[in-house]
Length: 291
Image 1 (tube, rainbow, N blue to C red):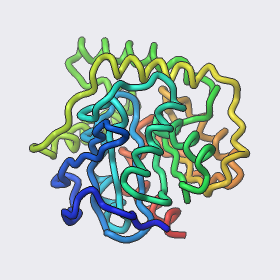
Image 2: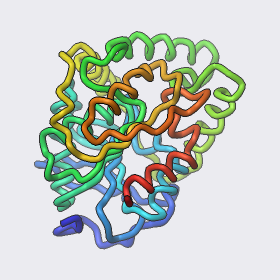
Image 3: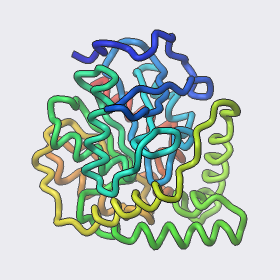
Image 4: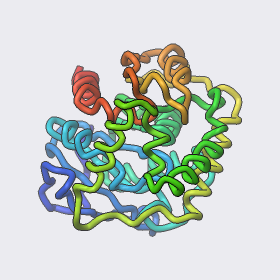
């Protein structure tokens, strides 16, 4: 069954992420904040966010495009943004909290879209709770032990310093290529993130950011994952020049997942490829979810 057994709020779901209210649900005594939009029926699509991201870091073009035909839910995991509690420092613990959040909303089955660190979490949820998950989409991510993933901390620190010196958002350097096209795409993406003016989320705390970095580093140093356990249909996407989670991980994921389906790598694009090519990705994701 995909419909919720109960709803934390009877408020009708909005059609635009810009106007989606921020709600909360109690997960073992801790409030997790989330936003929900799109149709009321159908298997809900749960979005799992990237390093340091909160609700307002999802591209509204991706959210609105998916929510035109799918129920979509974004949320802050434990300790992130306005959610309560302390952020775990392992991907496995984050995955456990994700499952608790999904069950707290009353869902018996969901689809997952995981971006970067969210893709790590999605893999663990799918492997450990196979009946809870129907399909998974993995973007800008890689398997445990994937090459280069353990370098994310160093890359992030350098980009943060570079951003401070140039007065630019570090995502410009981390998510997009250093080309004319990549710089334009980055600026456009960052402007879209400002569209929501009211009821914005809290920024991630330094302690949560450090816990996430530690979890990612551990994931990168783990032994190669046994992806044969994940039998769900899986869509795998990325830019061709991902610096944070090198794009070879995308090819590896698609090849090793039993039902992996590779989206041709987006040209002149990096870690934020699904944001740079938001129209293409939305179309590809909807076709995958509805097939």
